[in-house]
Length: 144
Image (cartoon, rainbow, N blue to C red; front, side, top):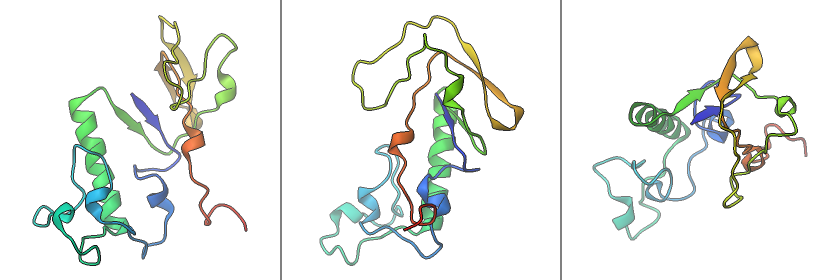
């Protein structure tokens, strides 16, 4: 799996968010299931008072996603490629663009194809998943 991101580091919208922003929910309810976001000395899921539960800051979330990415790269065939974009127009008509939400969608591609990225780089891939529709519209990028 190759994740291509225009941002230089993992973290999605948190890369662009303001420094004072933090989670509105307890950290124990956020992130990936296999790795806790909240500090190890605190079990947010056992906290009954939501006001006292740890709520991660932007910096903590960015550090967390960096750790998640490193674990995925060590354990699986996963790579994060930052500071890059992918021009979907380079796909030819025979290839199917898969959307993450489509169940059972697949392609019969048996060979890898070379695709160009921004900055003169290229990748080899069997399948392309277009997940751009999952991007949020952030006030920092979208005029009112």
